[in-house]
Image (cartoon, rainbow, N blue to C red):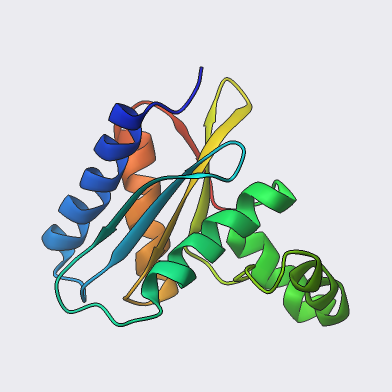
Length: 141
């Protein structure tokens, strides 16, 4: 299974619907395919300038390392030198905080969602909700 544009749009929309239900701050949602390429980027009104880069960095880190960004966050606390090295290799685009969630179908990574704008835990919760609502497996790390 591949991450189609239609599926990516549906995932992003589900993320924003959940954010609305929870009354969260304005979010930016990035959906990347398994190769780390951007499929969809949605920004709610009122988001700040760097939010698209942050959302993509959360998702890109998850894809690049094969781990949800919560696991990358824990790794950054335990081995900051390792995450700094990986971020250097990634050209500074890796954002190791919760909110980057791998999208899996039958144990195969088909993409990732990166969300930013509210607390990292709330960002992650919206991604997990969207992925699971569409019958896929969410791996936050």
